[in-house]
Image (tube, rainbow, N blue to C red; front, top):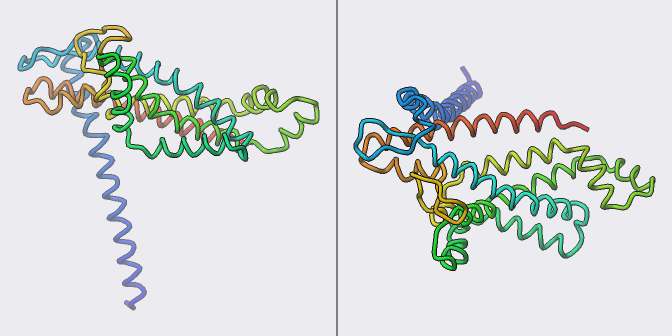
Length: 279
């Protein structure tokens, strides 16, 4: 065996080890929470989705009912705030890329995507929570909207950028102004790409923990409206997993499995929808 063959064998071995390490990491991060979490959900039964967490130290873990409500309302509100702004910003950056406002908006979006999400939560805490003297669902939604806004801008811009220029020329030749070309021709042509951006924003907000640590509060035993404290699934996992109570740790595992399952499902949907976009 010559030196070149030895190098090839060593290189192949390193590749196999790297792939094995990645697969092991994926197994640890996804499969383990699913297995342990589903075990908790099966033991708890329907009560896992219809009740509040049990008292610490009890045999039963209780449920995540109010956390599910808080998660759905907070994430929906965050997407409702961020997506229209991100959509219009992405359209403007794509259609008027050389203007000062577009350059400024793109730079701001890029900067916002680089800021650690916990800083966004601290910003909302300093500007909104301290002003209202109360953590709330609205404050959590505002911090989440800042976290997902730049990703929405990029997705909308890219979904419009892939459309061939010939369609713009055809619309302009018919006398359509630019705004009608965008909203009545280009956007409907790649509506699937826009919806992928919406799903991506929802997935990003669903999996975020840091932005809501200082803003949403920790209301696991009730839903107190938009101006009251609330919670999300990542926040429940963060608070309950570090406690010494076994039943609360089990509840955290169950919530983790829901997080993993929803994240995997949305990721697969986004991946499939992205592949089907063709021109």
